[in-house]
Image (cartoon, rainbow, N blue to C red; front, side):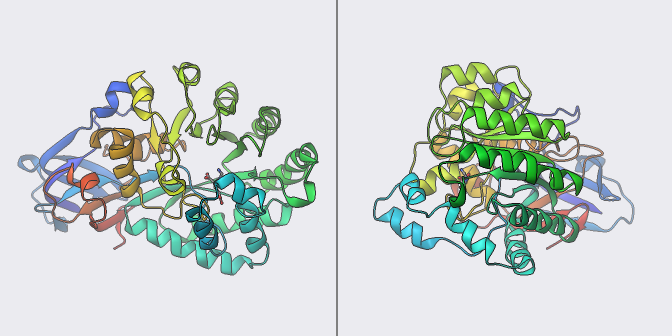
Length: 409
Ligand code: NIG
């Protein structure tokens, strides 16, 4: 397949790199008046139209349109049952996320709903959400468990994620988040629950190879640094990668714990100061920011500018979940990053593509336009400029979705 007359081919790499950091985040390479050649599901070639192949390869004319690497959304909880708009009303009336959680709402509310929902119905609901994110330009996504909190229900979610891997064109990474909240029956016995996560949940998950990563919500009112370290150590023994929900509501020590255990990413980082930035410098741990939750919960945004100016990489993800971000629209995330965190459009796009891929161990195959990478791209509607994308934040931009070299819509 040949895409011809592309107004701008965005996110091109000739020398492949696993991530972009600091000032390099703004170096988003684009080719004007370009072609893109796709063969066997991979990017075979690209360049200016002057060098386009002249043969009978089936061609798409992209006059006036841009072509982007698909968004790589490295943090979602999109397998959940039902929705929680009642809590949204509580938020409007002034209750905080933590107050709602203390009243038995929040994560534990979704846990009850998921328990009462069969695997097929859970799959059906999650499948609809994957269709939604595909249509808005996402091609690779990480999905967490964490609304089960018992062996059977955590396995149920992870099996649904496996089914999504098998039946959708998305590239999916699965993460086990048994330590998302302490279930009611373990109230006051948090360390017993951590034992259950380590001794009863991890072994069958490892045996069935249901998770690529293990994550912990390291936060005041949820799991301590000590709990986090115990779970990360156990995960590493099973050969799984690790991630940490860190510093969402306080300076929890989660960033330091993640770096110490070689986490592929630490996520949220709303409370990040000079000490945490210094700790992340020169590590392989990707800082992942989730501005959709800051928007939805009306909380201060993480200090993206300070992080990038210090030389760190930053990835952006949607955090698609029923409690703090009921949206998987990565383009809206890019808009928020620009206007609320003062990232430039170029930085935000790299954060949502190459660095997102890196945060789920996929940057060799996803996240940029490079020869040999998976041909997962989207063609925009006719657009005036790159900046129009974050600027016109509700205008639909995606016209054609191509995943693994196949036109999806
Ligand atoms: O990333 N922080 C923990 N987990 C989700 C919220 C999940 C929920 O409220 O259902 C988050 O914001």
